[in-house]
Amino acid sequence: MRIGYPCMNTGIGCTSARTFRLKSWSEERFLSTVAENLSCLSRILAYNAAHELLFFRVTSDLVPFASHPVNILDWPGIFAEEFAGIGAVVRENGMRVSMHPDQFTLINSPDEGVRERSVAELAYHAAALDAMGLDTTAKVQVHVGGVYGDREAAMERFVERYRTLPGAVGRRLVVENDDRLYTVRDCLALHRACGVPVVFDVFHHECNSSGEDAAGALAACAATWDPLDDGPLMVDYSSQAPGARRGRHAAALDPTHFAAFLAASRPHDFDLMLEVKDKEQSALRARALALAAGDPRVRRGRP
DNA sequence: GGACGTCAAGGGGTA
DNA sequence: TACCCCTTGACGTCC
Image 1 (tube, rainbow, N blue to C red):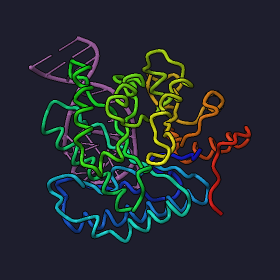
Image 2 (cartoon, rainbow, N blue to C red; image 1 turned 90 degrees about the horizontal axis):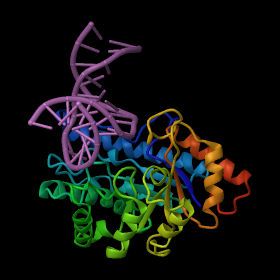
Image 3 (tube, rainbow, N blue to C red; image 1 turned 30 degrees about the horizontal axis):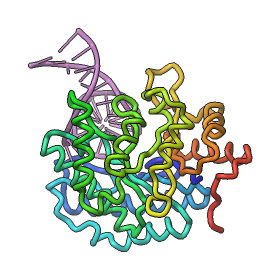
Image 4 (cartoon, rainbow, N blue to C red; image 1 turned 45 degrees about the horizontal axis):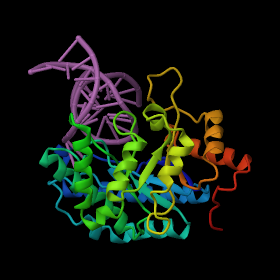
C-alpha cells in the first residue's frame, strides 16, 4: 500500500497549479508558467520521497490550456528534459502518480463537441504521463459522466467510446464511482462490458451505493485491475465533514473512521489517496496510523 | 496588501 | 426557462 494525496502540498511554499486567464495568454506567459509548475512538482516529489509518501495525484493545471485550441506549442518536446527528470524520480523511489481531469471531461456526452474536447483533454493527461516515461500503472481517472435522462444509453455510450479512444488514452483510463450518479455496481458493469478498471472511492460509496458493504465493493473493484498492466487497485479515501451538507469532504482525517476502513479493507492491497483538505498532513497522519496499527501492507520508500 | 468576483470547459436539481 | 449548486485554487481587479 502506497499512501498519498492529491495535487498540492500545503507546506513547501510553491504550487504546481499556477495558471492565468485566457485573455492573458502569451507564449512567454505559458512557457514560464509551465516551467514553474514543473519545478514545483519536482520539489513536491522530493518532499514525498523524503516522507515515504509514495502515491501522488498530479494536478490537471500542470500545463494550463494544454488542450485548448489557443495552445499550438509542442510542450512535451519543449519540456522533455523536465518531464523525464520527474518520471525518473517517480521510478527510482518506487512511487506511483495518477491524474484526474475535472468535471468537464465527459466521454459519454451526447454532444459531439463536448466529446471531442473531452478526448483532447484526456490526450493531454496521457501525454504528460507519457512524457514522464511512466508505464501504464500511472492512470488517468474519470467519472462515468452524465445520465442525460437515460442511464442505460449513457452507459452504452461510455463503453462504445472507451473502445474507440486513442491507444495512449485507453491504456491509462480508469473509471471511478461518484457521489450522485454512478455507483460501484454501475462501474463494474462498465468493466464487464469494456474492461475498464474501476477505482474505488470510499466516501462516494458511502454517499451513493446500491447497498453493498464497502469491503465487498473494494474487493470487486480490485478484481478489475490487471496486476501487471494496471498495477494495484487505486482507492480514494475521505470522510463526511461533520455538520456539513452530505457529500462534503472532511477538512481533516477522522482517525476512527480511517482505522475502521483499514481494518475492513484487509487483506486487499491497493494504493491509497487521501482526499482530505489538509493534503500531505492527512497523508502523513494516515501513514503513521497504519504503521502504528501494525498494518503490514504499508510500503516503505527505497533507501 | 487585503477582499472578493471571476475563471475554457458540463450537468443536475429546483423553482 | 432561469438560476443555483457542485469543487476549488488561483488570478486579477478594485479599493
